[in-house]
Image 1 (cartoon, rainbow, N blue to C red):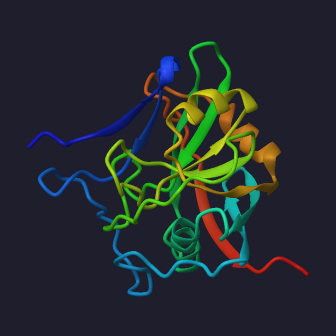
Image 2: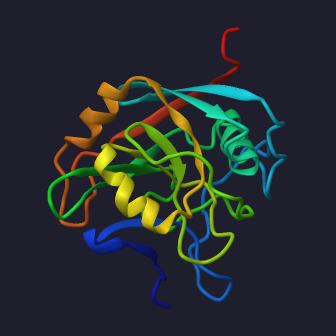
Length: 214
């Protein structure tokens, strides 16, 4: 059976965000084994007002993310749960996308298969999208289908990406990079092939979740 591939064409820029997972009549759910601690269905939403910092150690340096439950409690709770159980460890950034005019667009990761078609074995419910798409924002990747978010995410590289992302406005915003944007930019600058994949893989080595300092 030919594998399915879910893609979203973003406005006239033809910048693609691919999401893992196919419908039940497709294929390509997550093939990553879990330790038994990772969720197997939508985890609990993060409580209102809660925040979490996630230090993402990559093969090119550290990125620190601040996630806010008030932006998207279901999606943030999901991301935190996956980070806490080590789901993202040894997962690559499988896509570096630029817009047709050369504006940096996003780096995308979180697919345990590294193909752009993987997910954690479940999907989470959609929520109203709050916040603004801008440089440094962390958001969930998805297909055009309802309730299609899983584990894949992207980090916005440039304020110029706001237009095409806003024209769709279905990607849940989780928070933003608060340290290590230079690392994000370095990842965005690596050599990539014709499918926007890094020629030399950039890997998430580990993720550490902590509460922000008061």
